[in-house]
Length: 188
Image 1 (cartoon, helix red, strand yellow):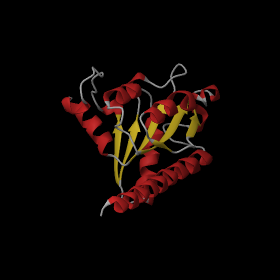
Image 2 (tube, rainbow, N blue to C red; image 1 turned 30 degrees about the vertical axis):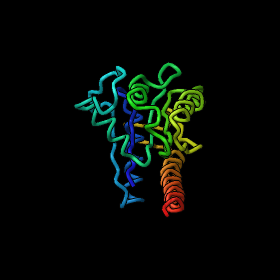
Image 3 (cartoon, one colour; image 1 turned 120 degrees about the vertical axis):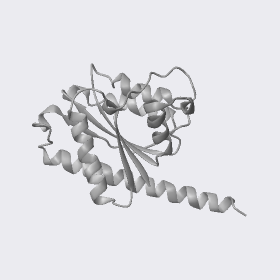
């Protein structure tokens, strides 16, 4: 199983901190999974210009191809000005509409205010639904007060991240099994 952690911002440290913990949880609890963290701060990703994702090279091509090959994606995103960052939206724009079909996608959101709690519902879930993902319905919302010096200090948040990891893996295994059984029915 290939799982991608996608840290969707070039600035700030809270989302990166949360995604680092998420990858640690994945590695500890699912050592057989192939896990890759794509922190967009580490890549020089071009803006989408309408080309097919395979026509991009360098970091842009690598990021797009890595996402396309994943079975599951855990998206980490901050909320800036009541919205997801452009760097994350650009990733969706780089991919074909069916790029995420049947992939399990879960979300982890960091924000400075509880007022932004519904942004994933209003912005991310519609995009992911349009791209035909299997969305883990619950997501982890982490407020600024849960961090201290690039560490998560709230045990409840850590528990919820561990649960999100578990839900993501279980849903991925379940959908994979269903698809394999369905394909076996059609093989004569």
